[in-house]
Length: 417
Length: 121
Image (cartoon, rainbow over all chains, first blue to last red; front, side, top):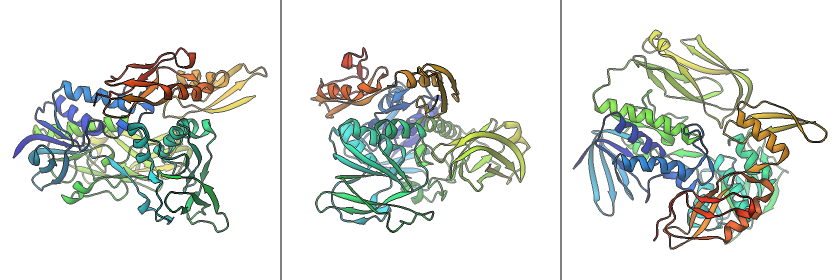
């Protein structure tokens, strides 16, 4: 059996940032397990720029952003194993993993950091009618074909879902000579960043049909077209609004699902809205010594926020390993009405610093006020010119506020117009 | 005349309103939350620019292509010409991050540089 103080599962931006922070906090025995052939995670195929504006103050592509952390991991001599799949975490924090050279690995960890990221919702989750012709793929799969393998997966494309990956791929396919017929979005708003709608769709005259979905896929061997339709306020297709669009490829950008199989199997409580673990302000789950960060905890829109969150988890894991953690006294956080979720879901009022609460809204707002209440009493009120589901928001609980709270109190965040 | 622009400089996506004279001169810029937003809005009304990220073919590398980007912003109307020139280029592995893959693309004065490493196979 191998022994490490901290085992990090996933070598993407979350795992690397967490490992680096833990090392900085004084833990030397760290192992990163990565399933792919290189560190960097999904950033390796995100070749567009826009990463790092918050964290580095400059605009980087995905691989460049990842490279800065890969270099640090190498410089700090943090151990990692590539091509290695984590299979199981036990009640006593033993991690089982497997790869071609070591075979089965049995690793006793004092703390485990979950940084497995997320995967895309597939066609099967949507129940779209139609044939099983080739040419239906997730936007991320298409992104790998084009950006890593150098293959064009189609010439005439319809994209379902206006998440950021779908928008980015609309531009990428157009630049490489494909015709993107349209992007259909089931909801009356896009879940992608506004800048992506402007620079990926508007720049190339690609129409975005809001409140529209794909109701049928046509073709025998290869997709020959799709039928799209408008949907009503209950997201049901409106009869008579169907429209046939000829295409050879249907790309799906319909949401991301945190990859929490390991998390669920060891019995960690999952938030039903985020599909990630329920955590405290150091991102510790309800399983002692197991922390979670990045897209496996909740889906982020900016990698910069993933990095910051993962540093918190790395610090938390280091404090746990070094025995700096005291018995917590928790208050819980709760999103009300338009606020769909808050991370962290609980906060230790004995924390010595300020605590940032991240949250997401369920619909768009203009000139709204974010209100934070403690046991029903308003403690923070912040005006926001614009709130959108695609853009994560945050409020800070100052330490003197935390100190005034009592155990089992409830913090609620709501949006008022 | 006024023009409404969504700034694409950063993920904030500020809604900017630019007031233009009849001859197209910028009179005022409102709604931006930083200096870069103002620069973007003025450029967008006078000579729109975009940065470009794409891939270049690689011979003998672990992958068929290596990602790259324009080292500066390119005139928006030249983006497709630049794509054509970049797609004709072919790099030899190993490629290091930062290597210049296409010099002075389409006489814009801008280089196309690798944004990742591509070790030899």
